[in-house]
Length: 229
Image (cartoon, rainbow, N blue to C red):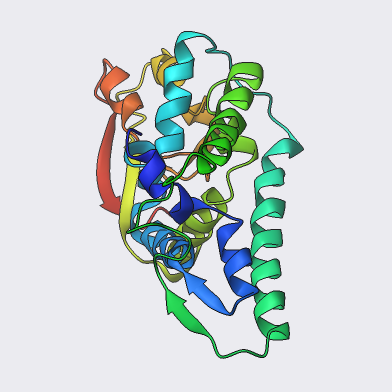
């Protein structure tokens, strides 16, 4: 989270489109591709342990800990992700210049926020992440807006379709007494009795953070490598 001013542009949905107008493939696209591939084996572990936006939202738990509303709002992030991908593809197809790769495009020595002007963008992104979490509930940005989540979700679904092994949270129902401590501690506000398939937590909203494992007094939850189906 403290490195966010350095890494900001590598998570940006706008910088790749700006680069596409100049036929430049920048670092964001490589990061997005890596997240898609990692999703096959690790699901959304990035969201749990490495995402600076996730860290910001968990800081907001101190002020807002309600459960975000369920419904079709969860599909907004898919629309945002598809729009970003479509814009990149269309602009690159229409641009007749030779494509070049510049991983550090629009950064100074790889640092994203390198001038006072960029702090306007930086604080704007901070507000975009924090406001939904403060107004709508825990990790609302992850649920509704994040353009990177669908990449990892798609990777996970692809891995399950091919029967590839991956890291999952497994639920042993024999030991479970349905105390629902896991649900009350889950940063994504999930209930295991609603999202478990063949003892594996298969919800696309699960970030494999392991908070439920720590909270379970019956030791009915654990990390395992399996096929999730």
